[in-house]
Length: 101
Image (spheres, rainbow, N blue to C red):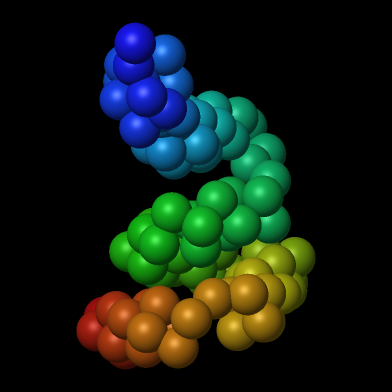
């Protein structure tokens, strides 16, 4: 007879901790493909995935557009990043933005 500590591993499936990350990456790809991307949702995904370069790219794209709405969205995303990301994430975004020509 088996004791409780000798249970077969396959009886207790281990949840796939990478699945949420994979789903978010897929959502991020889909959000980037639409004509009018939802930058706020994209920024949330980028922070969760810790993709600082993507955050920098979003800000650059918006600033390059140069119209008042895009600039306002860039500012709002910057404030959201400040409120919702780590200091390390912000530092990397800040460094990358400063290297922008």
